Length: 201
Image: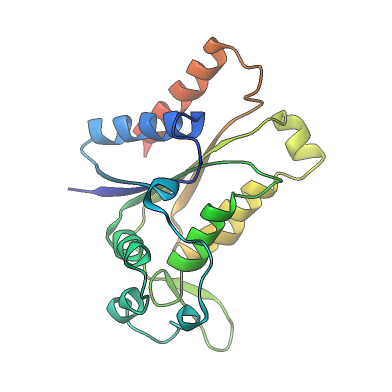
């Protein structure tokens, strides 16, 4: 059975990020995908990587997974290596993920677990079997302004920066914004979009 790693990086358990993640889970499970759900705040995920975690380059996958003393981080690393799909949900804070999600990237998508770098060219070769990545974001900036004024930095982070290390896995993104002042109909439309995109994966 294919599996999905679902990672939520919003501090509010009643957030729309959580609702989007759960809609994606419902669609994936309806399509026979087993979902492994992790709420970073509930798990107490520590985002700051200690010095002794800094070097996993050159390790095989199992060694790189186990190179971390933090059991929560080890669990996430192992889950990532076994996932066919990755779903991440977080708000847009200053054009970037919240610190807890940025720390998840720093501590989980490490050399030896997620990728290897060519020693000369510095080009990544993915070690993961991911087919697709679904990024779910909330924000309060209208999408046109996010693109035209700010250049949509979250899209750059997930599609161009992180995506380049995921072995060609397609990156899909659903943005619910501006969330503040949105109507119930608008919120339901965003949730329906999440379901449609997850179904299509």
